[in-house]
Image (tube, chains in turn yellow, red):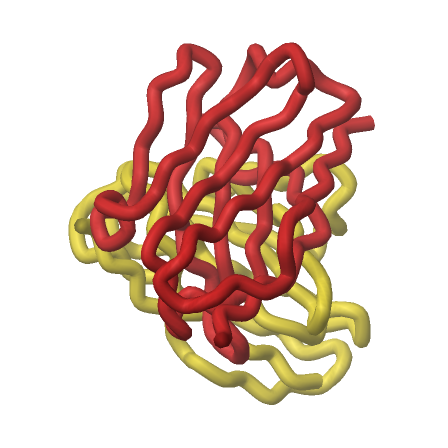
Length: 104
Length: 117
């Protein structure tokens, strides 16, 4: 089973900050990685797929990079609507990271 | 517009079977993969499994012995059965559309299931 490890677990940042979240896979998943954003009480929302492709309608301040076992989600200029929890998911065997809670 | 809606009992007794249905509109379920994901209170997301358009199913190894996912294309719905539930199965259960190129691109709103006597 492929394990996904996100860091940090919690992140405090201010509006306008550049924020980076990392996701490490226990074995290579090539580029088969997605990032999701979940607000309290809501279903997750797909942000990025295939490691770096922005889902339609997602603001361009979000970007993803990486391949193999190391991946990064970057928010270039944090907005108030970006609070919540971010998850990575590899879709070889579909496991999720444990989540990164972003506090504004 | 693709929409998914979970339905089923909100309370299940220990040792019994949890059964949920996801109604899909705006797209044929004869295409894509259809998945169930859950989230225990205050915890992260857990992949349960999916059913492909071919009817092939894949389950998380930790749940495989208790899980069945099936689909009824005539009703545009797919279902989850989880047997022998315990309190650790208490969670919000989400259904979703999944592709092997994007992950889960459409989600239901989620349904809360509590396991308690």
